[in-house]
Length: 117
Image 1 (cartoon, rainbow, N blue to C red):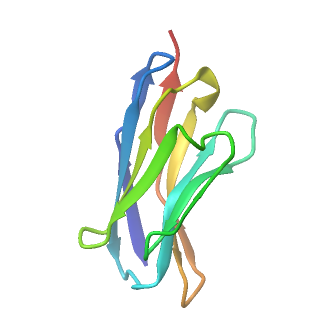
Image 2 (image 1 turned 135 degrees about the vertical axis):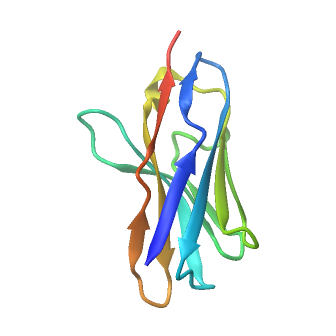
């Protein structure tokens, strides 16, 4: 089992920035992919950004150039730096961990990000 705890959400004005953090604990396989998804009211969950254990990244087109995903393997942490936020970024942001050997996927509880003036 892997436990994920997110932090860093909140209310920000359009054009502002936020940094999300996610701490992973438990049975963490060395080979894994961590990342962020989001879900807005009435919409399906969508990928925001992922990063592999060796640093390979993948971004949704809508956030590329504005968001940066990073990780600290020693601390089992993944981060999402979000810049130039727009109202359409408003959603619950969920941390995700996927073990490569087992293909099991785990989710955090989510943190609310609201972009509004």
